[in-house]
Image 1: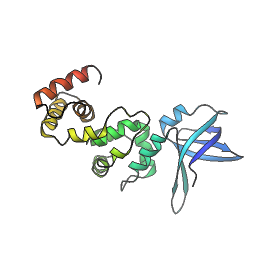
Image 2: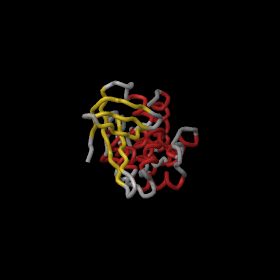
Image 3: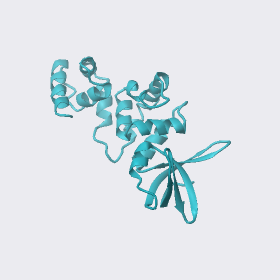
Length: 201
């Protein structure tokens, strides 16, 4: 299996790049985030890769960091989520944003990605909510387990619902409440979460 590529970037198209390694050009489908950060034609580049094996094709997917690769493998493990949809989700969101949306049960946010309907988004959240705690990315800035706990605790759930009704997303509300002492009552959780949100978390 091809795990990484380290070579010269010889072609850069909208959704894929070609990296030459030892005289062989490897075509890699990439996310928009990787596309933007990979560099220019002629540069030496490094990609983490995933080889998708199908009956009629062998497709190589490239990622600029290992966190993107791990989240790609996680979301494509869900039934009905193929490699192209996984790429679309990671093109729309950072790995951290995807993990946060899953941990907080925020399926609605995921529907912003091209081709992701409400049913698929809900399936991703339901199937992966218990698994995201084992995934960490380079830029993880939140505790996935604390967010999960916040969505179970009654006072925390009420606080999150109140924040969502005020216009915050499920992810933002869950992240703010998840950082707080879960023994606080609903009103205090709302008050402290609003302060946190006002400071930009």
